[in-house]
Amino acid sequence: MFISFEGTEGVGKTTLIRKIYDRLISQGQDVVLTREPGGTPMAEQIRSLLLSVNHEEQMSHDTELLLMYAARAQHLQQVIVPALLAGKTVL
Image (cartoon, rainbow, N blue to C red; front, side, top):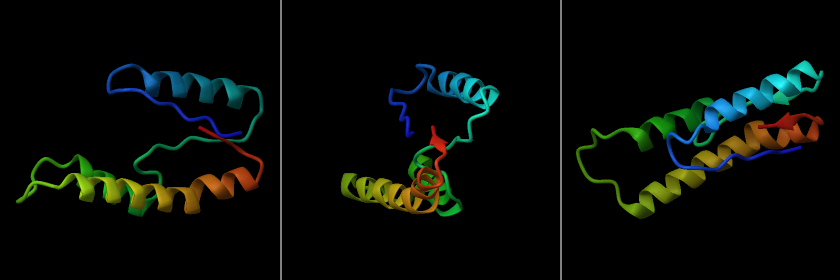
């Protein structure tokens, strides 16, 4: 099972995800808790770059979009797909 949480900053996604994670773990389920962008060492580096406000030049919208997709591709290949293939729940 793959459950994705969407929403703007500050709406409580992290709190909700943590509660669901704790509940599933208490029921004996094998759960992978991850985030996006991020979730792997390389994707976390991309996340840091995306969230950094101290760039010497303004990041173009196309650059930001491509970095998001690069982080997602890494995350899918290294974390999400293997976990799903192993029968785990991914949050």
